[in-house]
Picture (tube, rainbow, N blue to C red):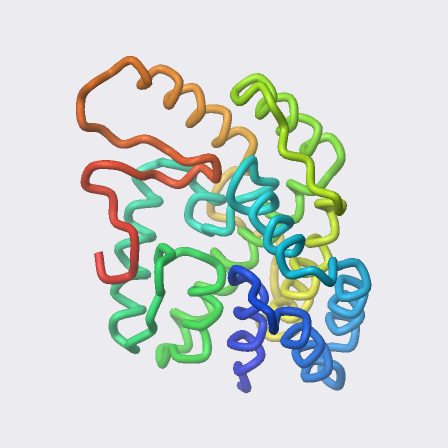
Length: 245
């Protein structure tokens, strides 16, 4: 099975640089023959993205990092800060190390890192399980976060927590096209069975609400303990920050 398309798609989930729109155009063209509907989604996103790199970076930051629409960490999206997420990170760290996949400054379960891992994996059974039971369900949950009701819930939560909402000049919902494109490719390659989910239906909003409440309760504590940033990612003492942890 040809899997280089996941390496190409991975670049679109990284923090944008000056070549981001050019890369997206190239990925859309590369997907055109085998995955025409995925290519259409990327073309639609291209028409919506701001031309100015700083506006594009602001849009990315607001979508996935600060007062985020969703997290890009698949383990967190599926399990929150449950111990299972720790097992996911540990296992993915091992897989990244085995094929020398550099995760940069992101965690092992960051979607971009996991997509780069896919074409490097040798164990086809493990690869299929990763795609069907983790990556695809996580992408499904990420797409759900773009529903109007979910976005409204998060805005209310962020306003309560931070008093001021960051409102970019461009609509946040446009990145839904990117997730749709990825899901279409996954479905075509791995024949996804949507009802086979090894976990309950979950939401980034629910995890985020719990973590922000925990963070609020820890503000008065001077002890060294784990806290969480606005994307729901654990930080602080003893928390791994990359693949080599």
